[in-house]
Image 1 (cartoon, chains in turn cyan, green):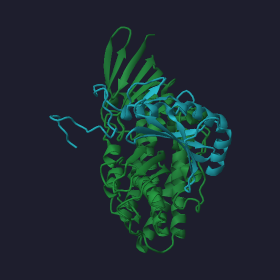
Image 2 (cartoon, rainbow over the protein chains, first blue to last red):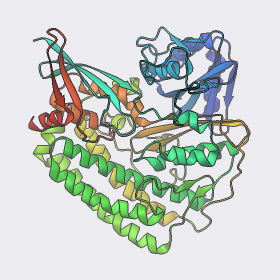
Image 3 (cartoon, one colour):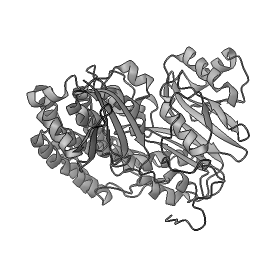
Image 4 (cartoon, rainbow over the protein chains, first blue to last red):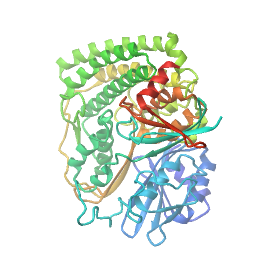
Length: 154
Length: 387
């Protein structure tokens, strides 16, 4: 299957809003959904192409929202699913029950970006230490690093 | 008998990702395992978005000491994809050669470590002696035994001269013969078979579900190899088999890796034959236009994925790295469940997380009575060798 065919299948069969659907020249398929529809889209992907491979989940602070990008391999195509999570909401549903491989990656996004993964079966911290201050997310752009008076060896 | 829960770590013997492992055991049987990572988080991703692309290249090289070339390769492929340039063909072939050299050195390093973990020190000594040959080749080509700094934006730093080619061919032929010998040992030596067959077993379906990759996935019978699934560089021009095994255990993972050494030698021979003359690098812009790219490559430990987003300046907006070890961690927990305590070291080593044998504190804690006794990692390894 090619990226263009995959995009066509998503456009014809997926019932819901798509914020983005593009087959790029480098044979990457990019699909975007509103952040509330992530579970629905993940279910659609698994139903359509079987047990897909989830490579990782990327978070990216874009100012007003956090881009959460799920990098799948579906039927031999690199499928990237993007959900823009508004910072006022700061929450996205877990897909771990649909795609078990997401378990670590979702915890990583929750740790580093402060996007709550609603319904995650194991929402403990993955990377940050237990005594890390609440509400301080290292990969958010408004995070300025060490406070004044703290030692910063960076 | 009461169930015991004990931790290994936080200084887990993994070089790039130390972990805290907690095992629940019933007698000698492991019934549950849990993992906690992040103890040497170096904030490389954040640092990447505060430095320019050339500085990031050096930073990415230092994500891992064993697969340093794989990281620079993935980073360069991603940035070059955003800029939309094609690097000179000779440079692509040289990148492939470096990629396969690194696979050979890493798999041989792993085989030695695996021998060490099961107390087969002879294997460890011989494999690491032979590994010096590929280290010499890497040094000849790049000037370094590690952190080769060979891949650069727009190509590779050094050319491979005719004098080098003779030495490379000779070395690779030696390594290929030795790898065949080690494949024989792995399938016939009782000492090895008894410690690896049916140890750390995990099914192919479970591997796919949990997102495993690389030799771990292939050793459970799933033929996913990025070099074939998403060909990069010139991999669509060379012939190589995808090595899989239906054994699903440590023995299967060993066989896949040893056979991949043989294949890597064959790929290198093809590269040397097919490499055209020409430039090995090109001028590369300092500023990268706005865009994003996802790049997967088959590093020696498995699928390595980079996501790079640029914003038109000379500093990337976001660099996301997912190393193969993270993908293989969930499945490594499955491997030890249901096995013996003594098999923990080799089962974990079988995902190739850079085991070192520094002393580790292991506390065997009786959750019911509150009694605890302490074992060091070396004592646990000794227990592993007695079994």
